[in-house]
Length: 133
Image (cartoon, rainbow, N blue to C red; front, side):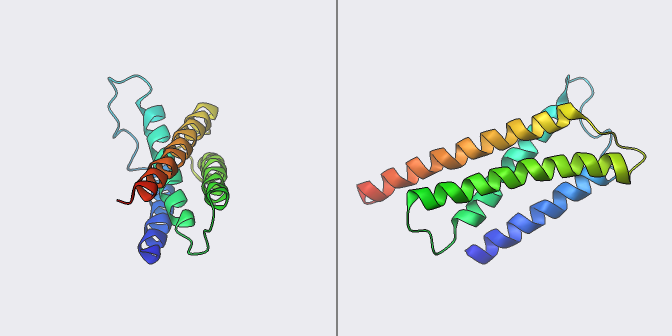
């Protein structure tokens, strides 16, 4: 399972890089939905944190809730920093993309939602374990 999560995590990084830096993605989002790109950013980075949180949290050495929480916080920090890096890369490496602070804010908000999902999943799985299912 850990190998599959590792593949998913690294593949998602590649996906985000391609989507963030490629030209072909521009114009795909609906123009009649205001700020649709911000929603896309938030969803993308929410998934980023969930996928990376699942991968990092699947470590066989996890022995406590505190250890797991450290892992998902690490995924959150990685997601936020990666979002900032992608905005800087758009600004410096492309002529057809722009640096946008609001995109970074949407990335961060999505990462917060991902962190909350991972935190809630810990509660859910703890309840299942306690009830014996």
